[in-house]
Amino acid sequence: MKIIFYGTREYDHYYFDVLAADPEYGCGIKFLTANLDADTATLAHGGDAVCAFVNADCSAPVLEKLAHGGIRCLLMRCAGYNNVDLAAAKQYGITVLRVPGYSPEAVAEHAMALAQAANRRICKAYIKVRNNNFALDGLLGSNLYGSTAGIVGTGRIGAAMARICHGYGMTVLAYDQYKNPTLEGLVRYVELDELLRTADLVSLHCPLTSETHHMINADTIKMMRDSAVLVNTSRGGLIDTRALIDALRARKFAGVGLDVYEDENGQVFEDFSDDVLKNEVVPILMSFPNVVVTSHQAFFTRTALQSIAIVTMENARAFARGEKLVNEVK
Image 1 (tube, rainbow, N blue to C red):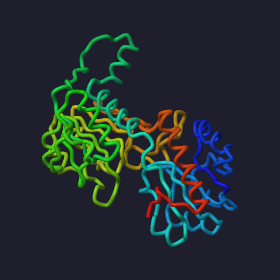
Image 2 (image 1 turned 180 degrees about the vertical axis):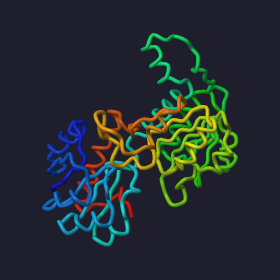
Image 3 (image 1 turned 135 degrees about the vertical axis):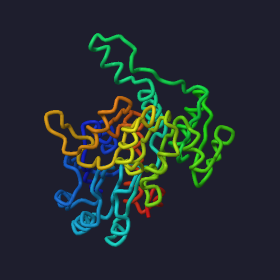
Image 4 (image 1 turned 90 degrees about the vertical axis):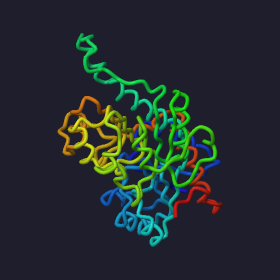
């Protein structure tokens, strides 16, 4: 089985090269630094499968070109698949497989790191000390111990975040359509309105769907405490960015930590240090002293990368052998 990997970086080789050399998987890999889009889809012609990441263009036109080139399998080396046109994949006979759970703790730990960095002004404090300014003005934070955390979405990552918050000595509220039995005794499930009104820390851990798009908007932001900390490590579209910026300008939120944001495609994972950003969202968000933005790196740990590689290759092997596809997206 020949797999064309799109949007690869040096760290992808650390884990996939070893597995590709294992005859047990029976796969040959061609690595491309170019990301998957309508212009690069033809580079996969002659392959059996393509492997793409969360920032790839997996729209209908791209999938059509892949299908015409003989591609029958799309391996997403990530959990999310909102960037994949599933109807088009079915139409063109392309099986979509993903990595549903690589390291929930990696993302949850980063979410808490963002919460702490925003709450205690860690980034601002670091810059001040680097400039020999040891004054504490502008660095006042709040205790998380004894406060209330609100976890929106209690799948594997949300559950990991709930356990972290419980370990901090926080009262943990949760909102989800389905209760996670592993959290019994640790969280209290409530409606979203109550969670937003009550929580001192609101952390988003749900997929991006038509129902969850802009779930944090002007109306729901009004429900939240002015002193709340908002964290998003899931998908940028969960938050209405314009409404968030308006709220920040009105002195809403003690802190905001974002690992994802709207319109990040074309910017995330790229180096623009010697260029001018065309996307104005990040510069505006970074202008607020209580906002911390990272570049979709919550997943980025050695444990997570190894798990992603293993599950991706297991998905490829199962497809090639005609075995049961436990991670198929339909």
